[in-house]
Amino acid sequence: MQRVVLLSAATAALFIACAAPPRFQDMRTPSGEFCTDMPIFAGKTQPDREFHRLEPVQSEPSAKTEPERLRSLRKAACFAGGDAVIEAVEDEIRLPDASYGKVAAGTAIVWTRREGAAAKPLDLGAKTEEDKPAGEPTPPPEATAPKEPKPVDTSVEVKSPPPTPTPTPTATAAPAPTTTSTGTTTKTKTTTKTTTKK
Image 1: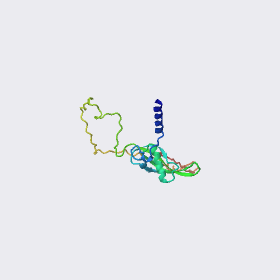
Image 2: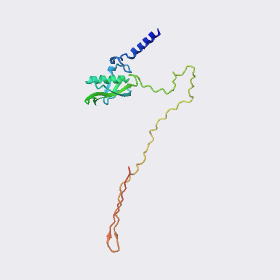
Image 3: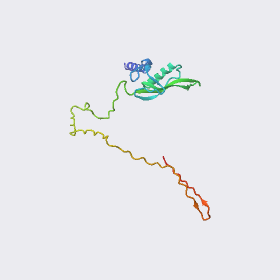
Image 4: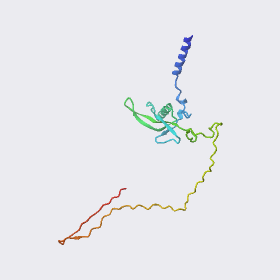
């Protein structure tokens, strides 16, 4: 009797393990949409919702037409657990038979917030009035009255600091001619270069 029960349990486990996966047309994304309706954002187009990148996905090389490649890309993203595909492009790859073929590639993403849901701050352990237990007393408010903000005095003139003088390149004036004891005149020219660091 025990052998019959054991054999039937093993047979049932074998059937469950070998059962066919669900059809792609019936599969749903984490947000609840059908995988066949998954949005694909081409190139640098970004969705207007917040998302998290999961992993790169690629269509099967056996897909010959563009609709087949898009369906295969959606299928790969759905198996990765994505809600959509971003940065979708068509790439040319080298097939095992040394020929070239096209595949669709992109990045599977998952939405971080449901559509229409407002932004909610992170819970960092702070308790609000609703979160406190009924038996916990509420501390009394502080006795000091809040200070009123002081208005800005616009009648005071604010002066900016004077601009710093910028040094300019200068040359010294030509010196006066000097006379030697032999009666010849010699002119000496001296130039000074000044550079400014910026």
